[in-house]
Length: 140
Image (tube, rainbow, N blue to C red; front, top):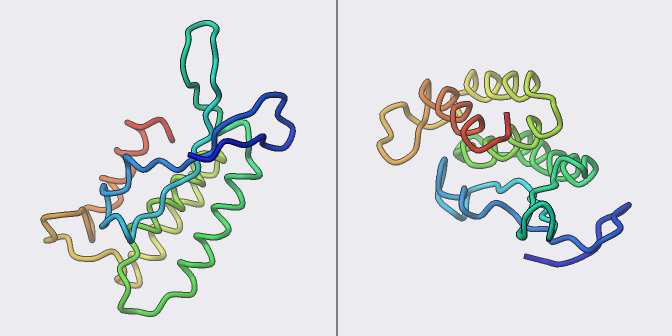
Protein backbone atom coordinates (compact mmCIF):
# COMPACT_ATOMS: atom_id res chain seq x y z
CA UNK A 1 0.00 0.00 0.00
CA UNK A 2 1.31 3.43 -0.91
CA UNK A 3 0.87 6.13 1.67
CA UNK A 4 0.16 9.52 0.23
CA UNK A 5 -2.12 12.49 0.56
CA UNK A 6 -4.99 12.40 -1.90
CA UNK A 7 -6.17 15.67 -3.42
CA UNK A 8 -8.42 17.56 -1.07
CA UNK A 9 -7.43 15.39 1.88
CA UNK A 10 -6.43 16.94 5.17
CA UNK A 11 -4.74 13.78 6.40
CA UNK A 12 -2.54 11.22 4.74
CA UNK A 13 -4.38 8.21 3.45
CA UNK A 14 -3.18 4.93 2.06
CA UNK A 15 -4.04 4.06 -1.52
CA UNK A 16 -3.99 0.41 -2.42
CA UNK A 17 -5.87 -2.10 -4.49
CA UNK A 18 -8.15 -4.81 -3.17
CA UNK A 19 -5.64 -7.66 -3.53
CA UNK A 20 -7.80 -10.09 -1.54
CA UNK A 21 -10.30 -10.00 -4.40
CA UNK A 22 -7.74 -10.79 -7.10
CA UNK A 23 -8.46 -14.50 -7.60
CA UNK A 24 -12.24 -14.30 -7.62
CA UNK A 25 -12.86 -14.02 -11.38
CA UNK A 26 -9.48 -14.72 -13.01
CA UNK A 27 -5.88 -15.61 -12.24
CA UNK A 28 -4.05 -12.97 -10.19
CA UNK A 29 -2.11 -11.67 -13.21
CA UNK A 30 -5.33 -11.15 -15.18
CA UNK A 31 -7.34 -9.57 -12.37
CA UNK A 32 -8.26 -5.92 -12.17
CA UNK A 33 -8.25 -4.64 -8.64
CA UNK A 34 -10.29 -1.46 -8.02
CA UNK A 35 -8.56 1.24 -5.99
CA UNK A 36 -9.01 1.14 -2.26
CA UNK A 37 -8.30 4.24 -0.18
CA UNK A 38 -8.02 3.75 3.55
CA UNK A 39 -7.83 6.30 6.34
CA UNK A 40 -6.30 5.67 9.74
CA UNK A 41 -8.77 6.66 12.40
CA UNK A 42 -8.83 6.71 16.17
CA UNK A 43 -12.47 7.56 16.52
CA UNK A 44 -15.05 6.10 16.86
CA UNK A 45 -12.72 3.10 16.92
CA UNK A 46 -9.06 2.65 16.16
CA UNK A 47 -8.27 1.21 12.75
CA UNK A 48 -8.51 1.67 9.03
CA UNK A 49 -11.64 3.03 7.44
CA UNK A 50 -12.41 2.61 3.75
CA UNK A 51 -12.96 6.11 2.30
CA UNK A 52 -12.64 5.19 -1.38
CA UNK A 53 -16.06 6.58 -2.36
CA UNK A 54 -14.93 10.04 -1.20
CA UNK A 55 -12.41 10.14 -4.07
CA UNK A 56 -14.44 9.75 -7.26
CA UNK A 57 -11.63 11.16 -9.44
CA UNK A 58 -9.34 8.30 -8.41
CA UNK A 59 -12.07 5.76 -9.16
CA UNK A 60 -12.93 7.43 -12.48
CA UNK A 61 -9.28 7.34 -13.58
CA UNK A 62 -9.13 3.61 -12.81
CA UNK A 63 -12.42 2.99 -14.66
CA UNK A 64 -11.13 4.88 -17.71
CA UNK A 65 -8.00 2.71 -17.77
CA UNK A 66 -10.03 -0.52 -17.67
CA UNK A 67 -12.55 0.71 -20.24
CA UNK A 68 -9.68 1.37 -22.69
CA UNK A 69 -8.26 -2.07 -21.92
CA UNK A 70 -11.60 -3.82 -22.48
CA UNK A 71 -12.23 -2.06 -25.79
CA UNK A 72 -8.75 -2.63 -27.19
CA UNK A 73 -8.16 -6.34 -26.60
CA UNK A 74 -7.96 -9.05 -29.23
CA UNK A 75 -10.57 -11.78 -29.44
CA UNK A 76 -8.51 -14.49 -27.77
CA UNK A 77 -8.14 -12.77 -24.38
CA UNK A 78 -10.46 -13.68 -21.49
CA UNK A 79 -11.95 -10.47 -20.13
CA UNK A 80 -13.52 -11.72 -16.88
CA UNK A 81 -10.86 -10.25 -14.57
CA UNK A 82 -10.65 -6.76 -16.13
CA UNK A 83 -14.42 -6.62 -16.58
CA UNK A 84 -15.01 -7.42 -12.89
CA UNK A 85 -12.70 -4.57 -11.87
CA UNK A 86 -14.31 -2.14 -14.30
CA UNK A 87 -17.83 -2.98 -13.14
CA UNK A 88 -16.73 -2.61 -9.49
CA UNK A 89 -15.40 0.88 -10.33
CA UNK A 90 -18.70 1.80 -11.96
CA UNK A 91 -20.67 0.63 -8.93
CA UNK A 92 -18.41 2.68 -6.65
CA UNK A 93 -19.29 5.69 -8.82
CA UNK A 94 -23.02 4.93 -8.61
CA UNK A 95 -23.16 3.90 -12.28
CA UNK A 96 -24.14 0.26 -11.89
CA UNK A 97 -26.48 0.37 -14.89
CA UNK A 98 -23.49 1.14 -17.14
CA UNK A 99 -21.66 -1.79 -15.59
CA UNK A 100 -24.46 -4.20 -16.37
CA UNK A 101 -24.61 -2.90 -19.95
CA UNK A 102 -20.87 -3.54 -20.30
CA UNK A 103 -21.30 -7.10 -19.02
CA UNK A 104 -24.01 -7.64 -21.64
CA UNK A 105 -21.77 -6.18 -24.38
CA UNK A 106 -18.86 -8.46 -23.47
CA UNK A 107 -21.17 -11.49 -23.14
CA UNK A 108 -22.68 -10.87 -26.62
CA UNK A 109 -19.16 -10.99 -28.02
CA UNK A 110 -18.49 -14.32 -26.32
CA UNK A 111 -15.63 -12.98 -24.18
CA UNK A 112 -16.66 -14.26 -20.73
CA UNK A 113 -15.11 -17.70 -20.88
CA UNK A 114 -17.15 -20.86 -20.58
CA UNK A 115 -20.05 -21.51 -18.23
CA UNK A 116 -18.43 -24.94 -17.77
CA UNK A 117 -15.25 -23.43 -16.30
CA UNK A 118 -14.90 -24.95 -12.82
CA UNK A 119 -12.30 -22.50 -11.56
CA UNK A 120 -13.90 -19.11 -12.25
CA UNK A 121 -17.50 -18.27 -13.13
CA UNK A 122 -17.87 -17.72 -16.85
CA UNK A 123 -20.46 -17.44 -19.58
CA UNK A 124 -23.99 -17.17 -18.24
CA UNK A 125 -22.73 -17.72 -14.67
CA UNK A 126 -20.50 -14.63 -14.71
CA UNK A 127 -23.03 -11.83 -14.21
CA UNK A 128 -24.93 -13.37 -11.25
CA UNK A 129 -21.64 -14.34 -9.59
CA UNK A 130 -20.15 -10.86 -10.08
CA UNK A 131 -23.24 -8.99 -8.88
CA UNK A 132 -23.50 -11.24 -5.82
CA UNK A 133 -19.81 -10.67 -5.08
CA UNK A 134 -20.14 -6.89 -5.45
CA UNK A 135 -23.09 -6.84 -3.06
CA UNK A 136 -21.33 -9.04 -0.51
CA UNK A 137 -18.18 -6.90 -0.58
CA UNK A 138 -19.92 -3.52 -0.39
CA UNK A 139 -19.56 -2.23 -3.94
CA UNK A 140 -23.32 -2.32 -4.65
